[in-house]
Image (cartoon, rainbow, N blue to C red; front, side, top):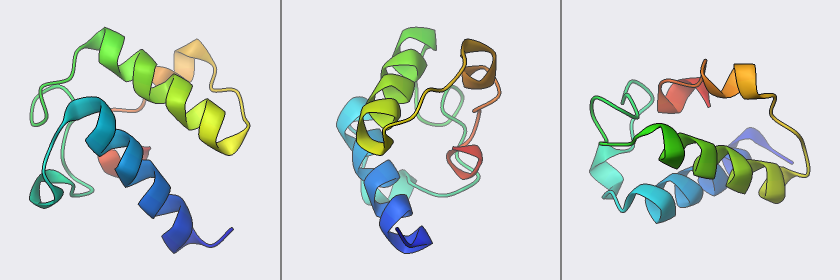
Length: 71
C-alpha cells in the first residue's frame, strides 16, 4: 500500500471520528488541542486504525499519537 493511500485512509478515519473538515486535517494538528478529541476518542481512532490496517497498536503507543502527523 502506498503512503498516499495510507494517508487517505487515516484522514477518512479522523474525519469520521472527529467530524472535522478537510482544512483542519494538517500534520501539525493536535488531536486534543486543535481538533477537540478526548482520550476516549483517541482510543476509538486507534481501534479504527487497527481494524483498517489489520494491526495492533499497544496502549502505551496510543498516548504518543498526539498529532495527525504522528499517526
